[in-house]
Image (cartoon, rainbow, N blue to C red; front, side, top):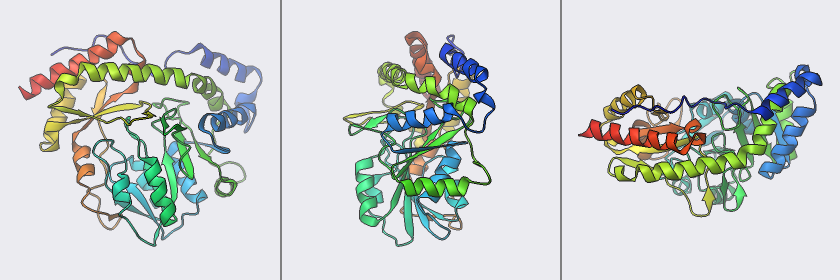
Length: 367
């Protein structure tokens, strides 16, 4: 079995502009303030980047989803639609506001909430929908928004994995009534921790501020975090272009595995941002143990590939309500493998070597 010899694929990368931002925050004393010029500037730059009126900085993307729900007026006893395959923090954010998740299946091609299935859901208790753009796939936001507007539902757009992506000529993050970013340690924009909620509605912003006000902001992003995010935001478009190029090269290099690997689908007129790159390992769709065997071998070969989310298809009726059988969510939870994004900024040779190791490992496993 081949082994990846390029790497390690460290994240975050060395960045002299980030170093300069840290030094400037030290010199001007802003690093030790509750609030200051870095946070103000970052919020303004996020509004410019994502085409929104307001950006509330916060401590994580996870708390950002909860704040967004509260800002949109979701209350105890309400129901909130969520994909059956999604980040577990989104399920918990619904529960944190006292609402109940209503699970809808994902599109098997994009790994995102299936807008066609969403259109079949009707319930007076539903007040909101959380839509995540996952693993290089983009949700069908025009159709999601159309259904939500017909039903009188609010939409939280989770673009924590895809800052800088675009859909229908608009930035991902500009579609929902509120949208959420994450600045966690592994994310494309990283400050170790942190997040932001974007919205055009001043009332949503005010409700979030009121909830977070405990004498001061209870879920803050620090000045130091804001300082290191600003130079990364300026480089996001360029880095996303590089990542997209590497993804195209890796897909070409693994095209001979079409019988075993089903890649996440792109959309015409859209450009994803790649925090993860997903495939479904087809043999594991019926034999889940094969994915675990594959991952053990890949990780032994130092390939930066791991499994996907566990999903919610097996959760009991006490905690959620299910619309349909969630067959795609169940299948993807046992077959998804994910390439981590740091390799996508590495040299082309490194990305292609990872693709060759993936090819070699799969062929040995299924021989």
